[in-house]
Image 1: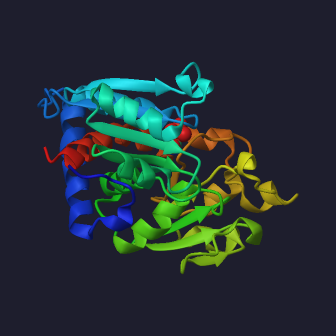
Image 2: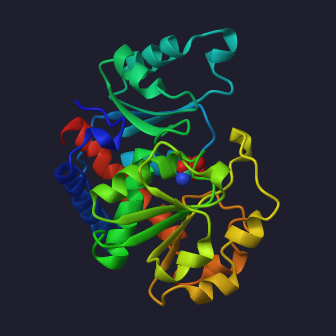
Length: 294
Ligand code: CP
């Protein structure tokens, strides 16, 4: 049994194998082919201590598609309100019969602690501002599907990079897969713990990018937005017209329409936002199979 705590723990051939397996599941999904029940007899438990739409639902569906049983822990209404500790909650859910614990938590290091408290597989479904490995994998899968390659792509991650766990994972994953990555935004929203170049002016580079990857400003994590943020960084109609014809727009969601992006751009063919969501299920099927060695 393995865990997926961070993509830095996986070598590139393993990441490529996961993406390849996800592509097989994606073909099955779109052709209506019957998916082999590789996780029959397995129980996957989702433990989300932060809100989620995409990640929790797609882990749930991914597990079901592979034939697993699924438990969805809901903190509201649980015995945590009676003082049960996180460790006791985790060990209780493991003892009920879980084989995999899919964990989202705001506190960095929680998933690693969970992996010490139980012998079950642990999958990181979002860790504070530190990591969101399966989102980065599904983004890589989306790029592969669109461009047929990641190597050589020029990717600009725009906005609140400092508070984004998705950006944190992408800044580490995409260069390993051969992409050239830039972080773009106001200085106070850049990630200082990365060698990835930070650029302050989106207009200087937008015409050279293959991927404009937008982020939501995370006010709930204390992000302060400069008054000229929308003027300088929103992907609006004028900026889209500066993009290369084949360049794409991505966003991990949830989107704040009218802030980081002009709403109508999401409906365009170059927007891969819903393709990213769709890639979440096959990628998480591949991850669940991998942690269980199936
Ligand atoms: N991208 C992402 O993690 O979305 P959710 O918060 O809805 O899961």
